[in-house]
Length: 103
Length: 434
Image 1 (spheres, rainbow over the protein chains, first blue to last red):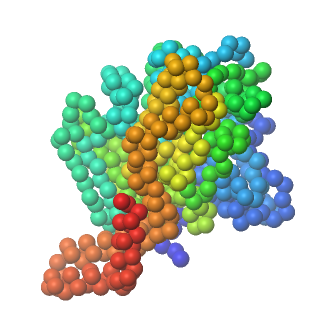
Image 2 (cartoon, chains in turn blue, brown; image 1 turned 90 degrees about the vertical axis):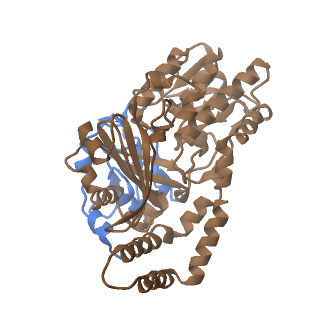
Image 3 (cartoon, rainbow over the protein chains, first blue to last red; image 1 turned 135 degrees about the vertical axis):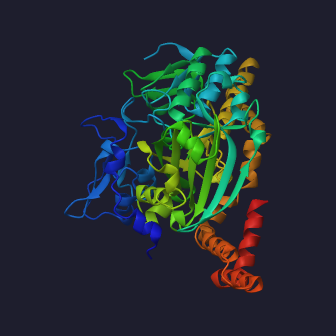
C-alpha cells in the first residue's frame, strides 16, 4: 500500500536534519553495539528505518551496523530488539552524547 | 566520590526529579541530585506545554522569572486526511488572565531555570554523572547508588528514581521490566524559528498569546499516533509520534513521517520561510495505568516517566511528573519527621496519596484507552478520511440537493465501516472512555 504520506516520506535524508544538532562524541567508546551476527532478525533489520537518527545501516553482507554519532539516546533500538538481544545498549558516559539546545 | 551521607538521592533532573528534590530540600532534607547530561535539560525533549497548576503547587510565583514562551489561548484539535482537516477549535479571551493556565515552553531553557530553583533550595546537583546501579544492603534494602565517576558510590536513606522513560537503573536492578514496543511512542520534533510578528500574524495572536494544534489522521499513515504544532515566542515546535511497534512493522522512517506532516497543505504555510535549528527524538510512555510498574520498595521510590505517569489521551505528562515528584518528596519528608524507616510498608503512603490526586484518577479512568487505540487503527486512518470526505460533500455546492448529500454521507460511513462496525466502534470507545 502506498499513499501520499508514504510518497512524501520516502527518500528524506536524516543527515540534513542531524547537522542542526549538538553532540559531544565519546570517540572510540560507542555506547550502543550490535552483537556479531550472520543474518539480522526482522527486529534488528527494522532499525535501519525505525531509528530516528538513522544510526543503523546494512553492510554489503546484509549485516546491520551502527554508527552512534547522531544518536538521541531514545531507547527505541533497545526496546525493538529486547527479545532478540542483538543490541547492547547503555547511556553514554556522563556529559557525552546528544546535547539538546531546545529539547 | 562524595564521602558524606545524604537523606535522599534523586536520579535525574527533569520535572519529576526537580519536583521531588525541591520539595525535600525546602523541608530541610539533605539531598543529592545526579544528572547524566552536561546540564539539566540537555537530554530532555517535550512538545512542550507546561501546565501551571502542577508547578504552582511547588513554586507559586514561578511566573516572575520562569522562561515561559506563550500562554495558550487557542487549542485546535484536527482530524486530517491527505489534503484537508476537520477541526475543533477553542479560543477564549478568558485565557488572557492574570495567572494563565497553560504555557508553551522550551524544555532545555525551562529545565535550567527549574534546576536553579532546586539548587537555591539547597540541593547538591552533580551533572555529567550517570547512575549505573542501585546499592543494596544484606537485607536487599537500597542504600545508595553506583555512578560512572571514579569511586562513584554515594549513600542515602532513600533513592528517588526520576530517571525518565528508559528507566535503565530500575530495569537493571530488577525493579521493573523492559518497555513494550506497543506501549511506548517514539516522537520526533523540530524547532522552527520565525520572527515573532510573523508567528503572531499567522496565528492571529497578540503579545504572548499562543496557539497549539494536536492532529491525528492519515498523517500517521495508519499507525497509532498524533502530530502537533505549538507556537513559541520566536519559534514553532512541530512534531509527530507513533507507537514504536507500529514504526517497526510499518517500515517508515520517523523523520520521513515528520517531513510529510510538515509538507501537508494545512501545515506547510504555517512554517513557510522558517529556519530549523534542531531535530530531536524521545520516547513517551503511553501504556497508561496498566503499565505502571512497582512504584516503591525498601529504600526506593519511582516518579515521573519512569513510573509511566503519562496521560496520552490528554497529552499530559510533565504535570504528572511534577505532581508525582512532589508527592514522593512530601511522603519522604513526612516519614522522616515521624522517624519512620523508608520501608516498603511505610512507603505505601506514597501510593495512598497518589490515589487521591488527578494522577491516578485520570490514569484509572483511561486504563482501557491505550489498548483501544492500539487495536483500532481505523480511528487513525478510516474515520479521519470519512469525516473529511463528509465535510467536503456537505460544504461543496454543486447542484445536488441536500437530502442526496446527507444520503451520500451516511452511505460513505456504512460502506467504509459497515453499520455493525460503526456501532461496535462507538460502543468500544464509550466503554474505554468512561
